[in-house]
Amino acid sequence: MLPDRVAKEPPVLNPVSQDLIDALRASLPAACFRPIEPRYLEEPRGRYIGQAGVLLAPATVEDVALIVLACNRFKVGIVPYGGGTSLVAG
Image (spheres, helix red, strand yellow):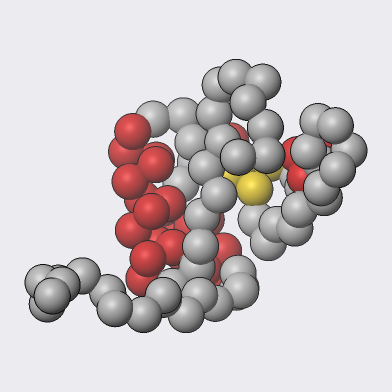
């Protein structure tokens, strides 16, 4: 039996809303916001193309925390990326 604090069903996630973007803009430096360019959405081998409602490049741990808190508040999923390890597709 699972403990009560573990979700028994997957969460329902929302798309990125203007309210979320406004909340992020109110709490993050402008430098964190990046234009959504194809190079950020394409898997390096060209096998997959993703989607994004907003693209952020946090500079500090505090920026990351603010992003996670805001996305949790609005129930929006996050796809983290960092480092460019050359490990792709899983």
